[in-house]
Every structure is written in structure tokens, then in C-alpha cells.
Image (tube, rainbow, N blue to C red):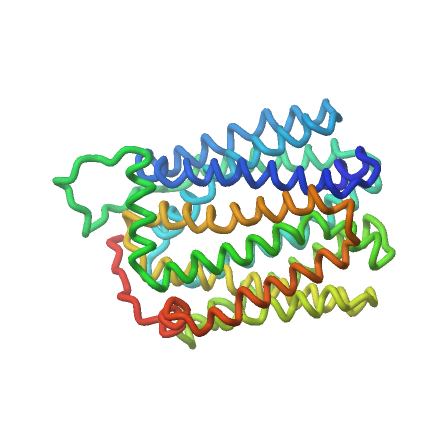
Length: 380
């Protein structure tokens, strides 16, 4: 984002285009990743997706043309989309069922740590070295470490006890359709799907406007932008750690709904906290809510979704988040130059509120809140 923002003379529309391309390709990759994770060995698929991103990272080191950067970033997103559903399904296969809540909580905390350290290191490196090569070298090192760890992982795919062995293998589209029908038949999963869509739309507008918000509204620079993202991750670290305790003491679906309801209020507080220190505090609290909800949502899926549907459910939930996210990026691409950053974020906050609280009265949300879905038992 920082590189594109500097190359286009701080034109916000390009940030929206960058985000829209990234998320479009992430959606396509996620759609492919679900059925591929059902058809092939998931560890092999994870290694393939990691390996495919390495030459793209190297390519970014040598070209500074805006559209090349945007398109290459999109290809990286495609293989990330292929990677994500299988990664989450593998967690459910290699971790004993009694420890799955702790594993998902650890996953949330790890993601928060990456959000904490990544933006701060990336923004600091970019500001200090006046370029992106050093940041890309760090990315390249991370992918190489990931390949090594995946190759050393002891992985044996689980067999689904409920699978119908007499059924012929489904086609690619058949796999997607079956997963979608599975979600549609369950009110609680429909609620998760819509929740992901609402959050995706709002975050799709928010992310490309974070940097302009820091510069235009807060009157700060690149280091403060990196620190803002890092504090979001710091709050998320505590949220990820709290998720396990919350899910142990309360019904998981109830935890998801309550945390979701707090997020629009956090966004409203954040855009109106224009004192820098107060803004930092609010963004950290918002990060806590988000990274407590994400592993709680993963816990709910782990508890209630059969093994044969896991990658497809994760894939479709990713899609439900990303497609509206693309729409948000397109909104910024078209209108980012016509309205102030604060005005756009204020409208998005109002949309977030209006699409969250009235839905608490629907049967889907009440079913998720009741959290009475049958728990699955996985063979280990």
C-alpha cells in the first residue's frame, strides 16, 4: 500500500484498485482451494501454494510499475486463497479434538502477532530504506521458512466417518454446490455467512483508507500508520488469547454474536477519536474484538461442521467475506478522490451499524446465538 501510494502521488483511487484486484484474486483462489483441498493431499496443496508465491515476490523486487505491482499482488493473493481453506482444515486434522479450541485460539493470537509486527516492521523498513526491497526479502524468508515447516509436518488425512463411500466423486463445481447447500440448510452457518459479508464490505472500504486517514485526519506519517496497524495487532494478540477462555466458559455461537455486535461501536469510536493517543487505544480495542471473534468463529465451525465439508465451508466463508470486500475496494477506487476520507468512513460505519443490529431479530442470528447445533466427533 505504501509503495503504490507513493508511486501515484497519493491518489486514493489506486489504493482501492489495488485492494479490489487483491481481493478478486483471493476470492478466485479461495473458491478453487475448497474443492482442491477435498481432492488432493492438503499438505501437498499447502506446499504448492507457498512455493508458487516465491517467484512472484522476487518479481516485485525488480519492477516499480504500478500496474505490474497491482497484478502481481493479485497473483500472490490467488495462491493465498488456495492456501487458506486447506490450512484451516489441516488444523482440525492434526490437532486432537479436545485441544481444537486452544489451537484455534493460538492461530488467532499468531495472526495478531503478525498484524502487530508485520506492519510496524514493514512501514519502518520502508521509511528507513526508502524502498520496498528489504520488506520483500523478509517476505521471501518467511515463505521459505513456511516451506521447510510444512515439509517437516507429520500429516495423515482423517477419514470422515459419515462419508458415503458409494457416492461417485463430485466435480469441481459439484463440490462447491454441495458445500453451499450444506451452509444454506443450516441457519447458524447462514448467519456466519452474512456476518462475514457485512464485515467484508465495511473492511473493504476501511483498509485502503487507513493510510489516508492517518495522513489527512490525524495529520501523521508512515511510521504512525505502521504503529496504528501494529496496535490493532497488539489488541488482537490479547483477543486471540481470550478466545479460548471465552469459548470454554460460554456457548461459542453466543461469543461470536456478542463480539460481532461490539465491532460497529468500536469503528464508530475509532473514526471519531482524532487525538492520536486515543485513536491508538480504540484501534487496539477493536483489534481485540476482531481477533477474539475470528478464532471463536473457527471454533464454532470445528465443533459443528463434518470433516468432509470443512474445506468447502471455510472456502465459502472466505468468499462471503472477500466478495463484499472487493465491492468496498471498488467504492474507494471510484469515489476516493471525490469525498473526504472521514466522510466515506462515516457512511461505512452507519452501514455497518444498520446491517448488524436489526439482524439480531432474525431466526438465523437467534439460532447462532442459541448455539444448539450438534457437535461432531472426529476420529484421530
